[in-house]
Amino acid sequence: MIGFTAEEIDQSAPTRAARLKWVVVVDSALPPGRATNAAICTAAATSRAVGGLLGDDAVDADGGTHPGLPWLGCTVLAADTETLRTIRRKASARPDFFVADMPAAAQHTRVYDDYLAAVKETAAESIDYYAVSVVGPRNPLDKIVGRLPLLG
Image (tube, rainbow, N blue to C red):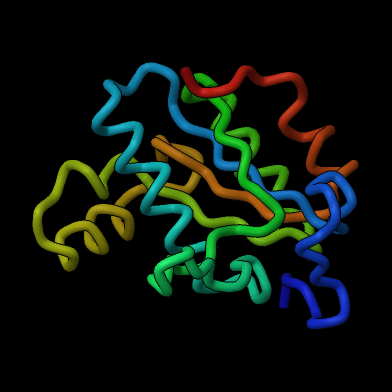
């Protein structure tokens, strides 16, 4: 399992001090609404699966609670379709990485079972991805995502 132990979580340290890094890489050709949807969906899957990503809840001066956010941050990058496929392939090959992806079929179906069926009928090398979320050790992850630009 990929994640943080309680002893590793240091919300007072800079994000670069964390053992793991989190990136979401989104298809740069998507319109803003679809790109945002793809990033959010892969982030939701990631935050559910990777332990210790979310920090403590924040409490404002009036006592209102604001749910915890990722204490280690999450960089959102842009890439073309082929680069997304390559990032997913390389990251998935590493046992010390967690990968969540959004195949294009997810945004082209309105029924989840139809999405599952569409993916099942598509060979792995033919799947186009709208976003890939990866959590892994900082240096190896940086080598996989290279110098991709921030999603803009």
